[in-house]
Each structure stands twice: as structure tokens, then as C-alpha cells.
Amino acid sequence: MSGTAGLALATRGLRKNYGSRHALDGLNLSVPMGVVYGFLGPNGAGKTTTMRVLTGLVRPDGGTVEVLGKPFKRGDRHRLFDVGALVESPTFYPYLSARANLRELAASGAPVPSKRIEELLDLVGLCDRANDKVQGYSMGMKQRLGIAAALLSDPKLLLLDEPANGLDPAGIVAMRDTLRALAAQGKTVFISSHLLAEVQVMADVVGIIAAGKLVREGPLKELLSMQGVVKVRVRPNLVDAAIKTLQPLAAADRLIESDREEGWLAVHVSADRAEDVNQQLAGAGIFASGLESGTDLEMLFLELTGGQAVGGEGTFVGLGAPTNGSATTGKETAA
Amino acid sequence: MRLFVSGLRKLVRRPASWVTLGLLVGLLVLILIAVGGTASDRVNATREAAAKDLVTFPGAYSRVLQFITGLGGLFAVIYGAAIAGSEWSWGTLKSSVARGESRVRYILISYVSVAVMIGFGLLITFAAGVIAATVGAHLANVSTSGLGDTATLGGLPERLLKGWFAIVEEGALGFTIATLARSQLAGIGVGIAFYFGESFATIFLPDIVRYLPFSVANAALATTSSGTGGGVLGGGVTDVLPPDQALLLVGVWLVGALVVAALFADRAEIAG
Image 1 (cartoon, rainbow over the protein chains, first blue to last red):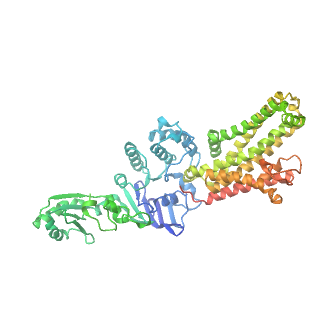
Image 2: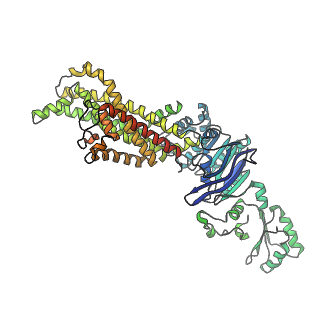
Image 3: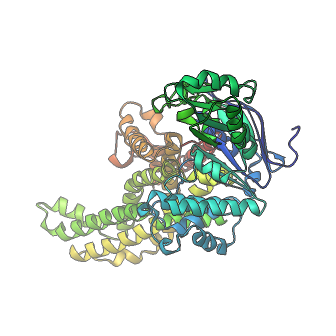
């Protein structure tokens, strides 16, 4: 596979069809080593199918996968010895305890030292309940146990599908710290999620998928700097003049949107250019009564995916978000 | 080896193992003690003799074994289906596959664990049945001098082994059906339907049914080369296969069922 050196995970032209539906339609992922990678996409975009392909649960119809620098094809199950995964909801024997579940899971796949189970129970905060049957566990406790199960083999690559599901705020913070610590040790953490705020806090690199294709991938900071917005409020009768004044600041392919009744303008420039915007307006004799700036993964996500879910229907319309890739209203979506 | 030991540990801790064994032992003990306790109350001598015959050794050894292989076969179908189906229903197969475990190895070793559990269950139930028949014999005032019949005792290991083999084959069918259905409940339901369906089918298709899995399992345990077949119900009357031929077919069905289960699991797309 070309151009995959230094990648923990790479897919090229990955395809998977369910009947006539293209769940994955030529997916090209490049996940660098030692980062937390946020894999984002609306419902039905192909995130879970990707996770299933990466863990050998389903086989792709086309394309290639490389795991930790080596091809991962049918029969290459040993590649997964260095991979830990939590795919969809965590699954356990309900009549066994957490400790017993981890012990029995450890009997499959890569060998696991017995002390590792105790370390992981401690790590996910389940030591006190480790001998209780899993059938009595809350969703959050099962999720913690699922994360422990994914970490059993001390994997170099960790694949987690919606890891924050069911976790309480303390659990989310603890999970975030754990995953960051793993990345700091050189391990790669691949998180599939629709919790944008969580990914924004945690991820180094993000990939956004829509309709089975990767629509954007790159370092989060870089993507967000391209997605900055400065909102400025002027008198409603000065909106046209303000747009004319600020147009040179905005990138050529970006729009300045306005809410004329309220006098808000959203200028798509790097968030650190708020001062330039203010100065430009003042230079034209227009004085802002309000000024806000920021960057937002949600805005980037909505723009790239068109706020779409399964079947391409806009599911965020009722919340005031856009129904296509570009028409945002500054007031409702700007940071 | 660690997968096999893990499989056994899971089965030992699983309530379904003990419920299945408890039901089989409970029914057998209840029947033998009830028959022994009421043998003398029968309205005529023929019925009294038949009741006493059930708890009279050495014949009681055969009767206990027949009960186990008959009803035990049905229980094995249900048990095998429960074990295989739950791997899909609970998603535990998915977790192991995602850890790099071989699907074929996982399926086959899981069933080896089930087969070992069936062996333990057979021995425990047989021992409980012999004890219950002895108690029943005392209640019926029947001599237990036949308990030590050396000819019968000498043949017991072979008969127990054949019984185990036949029950393991029946369990494998339930296991495979549930694997194909990817569901515990569907597997149990379809397994039971097959079991009784084969019994009823002897009425219409006796020449075909005698080659089918439950009929060959019964025929393999027969001490003579002709008689009736058709599972726990007794089914329709038909000529059964000679025991040696039936035993060979039991092996064919067992291997066939496990190959189908393993191939299906290997090719299946695991979701949910």
C-alpha cells in the first residue's frame, strides 16, 4: 500500500455493500501512530461498519486495510493480537462476574498475564464490584468493563466505538485521561463517536465520514483553524455596508452570512482575526456592538456532512442547523 | 488448551448446566422412587411385575441408561442450542473474534467443552439413577442382588461410552442449529421441533427416518439389531439400523454437524 509508512491504521478504497446500499464507498483512512484519532460521522455514515471491518467481524467487498504497518486480510487474524477493540455495545456473559468475564475473554486471542486483569479492574474503577455478576451492572459499569476488555492485551492500537456511552461525567473524564495517557505512551487510540465536544477535547487528529466516504481528515487544530468564525453585531441598517467592508477579509470561497433583523454577521476567518474584523469595520466608520470569535468542530462537522443522517435527510433542521453544506446562519451555529 | 479450560469453566458456572442436569436427575429419581414405592399397590399382577421389573437389577441398569439417552438426548439438543445461541445473542463470540481468535477453533473447542460436560452429566445422572433404583427396589421389596452382576457391570463402560457418543451427536445438532440461527431461543425452538419432527416423520417416511440423526442415536444403543425407533416418544414403528451401522452414522452426523457450524461461523458476518 502506498503512502502508509508511519501509520497505525490505513485503509485504501475500502468498500462494503449491504445489498444495494454502499455502507463504505472507497474509504481512505490514515491514522498516524501515537495519536488519539476521532472518527466522526452522522448516523449511518459507515462508522460501525468500518469498526467491524477493522476487527475482522465483517469482510470488505473491496479495498485494503493495513494494521500497524502490515496488511490485514482474511486469515491475518494474528494482527488483532496487538489491537484492542470495543465494537458497538460491550458484550459479556451475564452470569459471570467482571473478573471472570475478563479471565474468560483473556483465554481467547493473545495471551494475557493474570495480574493484568487486576490492573485493569483497578484502572476502570471496578475493583469493588469485580465479583458481582455482570447482569446486575449499570450501562456505565458495563462500558467501563468493555474498556478494560479492550485493554486486556495491552494493545498498540485501540479501537473504541462510542466509548463514552453510559459513562457518568467522572467516568468520561477518567476515560479521557486514560486514553490521553495511552497516546502519550505511543499507543494509537481510534475513537468512533458522534459526541463532537468529547472528540474536540480529546483527539489530535480527526476523520469525518459521510455516506461511506472520508470527507475530511487531518490534525484537529489545523481543521479548526480553517473553520474559525468571527461574529460581529452592527446596526441592522448597516449590515450591507458591513458585508462590503468585511468581504476582503473572508476567504474567497467563504460566505459572510447575516441575520439582518438582529444585525449579526458571521465572518468565516480564523478565530484569532477578531481584532482585524473590528479594525476593518471601525476604519469604515462602522462600530460593532457585539463581537465573538471561536472555532467549533460541530460547525465543521455539519458543514462537511450537510447535517445529514441515514438516507441523506437533514436531521438537525429543527435545531436551526443547516440543511446543506454551506448555508449557515452565524447566530445559530457560530461559537 | 486455555480456550478449552475456559469453555469448561464457563459451562460449570452456567445456570443452564445445572438446571438441565437437575431436571434430568430429578425426573429420573422421581420416577424410579415413585414406581418402586407404589409397585405393590398395582391393581393386577402384570402391572405389579412390570413396575418391579423397572427397579430390579441388573435390568435396572439398562432402564436407567435408556431413560438418560432418551430424554437426555432431547435435553442435549436444548443444551447445545443454548450454548451456541448465547454466543451470538450475548455477542461474546464477537468479542473473541475481535481479539484475533480463530472462529473455527472457538466453535469447535466450545463444543468439545459441551461434550465433556455431557459426559459428566451422563455419569452423574447414571449414578443418581442407580441409587434411586436401589431405593425403589427396597421400597418395592425387590432383591438388589443383581446390582453386582458381573456380566452387566463388565458391559457398562462400553454402553455408557456409546450413550455419551449418541447424546453428544444430538447435542451437536442443537448446537449447529442455534449457530445457523445465531440465536439461543430460535436454536432451542428449532432443535426441539427437529427432535419431535423426526419422531413423527417415522409414521410417513420410515425408510428415510431411520438414517436421520435422532433415530441413529437410538439405534446405536440398541442391544439387538431390530426393534422400534423414533426418539423419546417411541414414534412410529420402523425397522432400525443395526447398532454398528447406526454408530457409524452417529459419527457421520456428529462430524457433519460440527463442520457445518464451524464453516458457517467462519464465513458469517458478525454484527450486533
